[in-house]
Length: 295
Image (tube, rainbow, N blue to C red; front, side, top):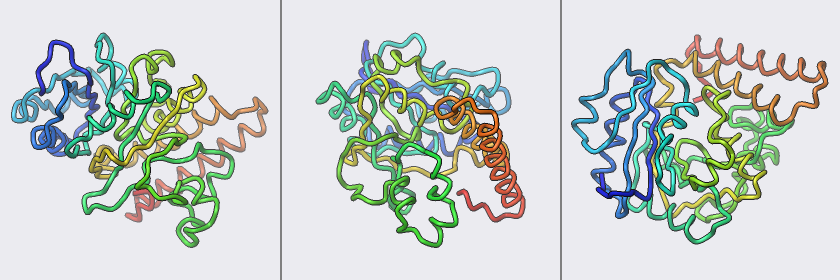
């Protein structure tokens, strides 16, 4: 850790039963140390099952917050940053690794434009492939163009998929976007607190979309900046319990719908719930069969 009496950036990592990935994440900070004051807090949702003190000791410099039970991603991050005073909050998955200059580039973007509340880096996979980590806000047509839809699979250049997945522009350029992935997201503390932090109604998934939407409603901007880069092993954090992760993904879909899109018309709400439930059941069956189309 870069020592400072008052760090500029608080790195919040919510961990659940992925010590090997967490170790590589922490090691990346030693391998590519940020040239600014920062500190790392790890909120451990699996503390009662699998202590990670040894992993932290091997990589040094991180603070451990042991949670008595698995309270979810958003709630874990809220606990990690509570009572801290850093200007910027960097929410980072344990299945990621930072690259040289990652924190510096994100801080610079926020410092240069006070209207930007959140900024996310370029995400690349283990072999260097670009992961589309910023997207349009979901809507009623998203089921046609989401990442695993048949339309996207068979006709990836269709306008619905290109618009939602944001594959219709060059991701080597920085730009304002609807939302950025919570796998790596830096947020200005004052704006994070102004919207009340992560909504803990979302146990896992969609809390990043919800946060970005509320930041937009505050009149702030959300940005994607590929001058900062992280490596991300997609699904690494949720691989220990794929069935639970799948179910929570779909539960969060309906939670997001009810919070932001519901017209309070019972029939429409029921049909939406039915559609999401059927999709979830289909994916659970595919997971059990080893098809895993969602990964």
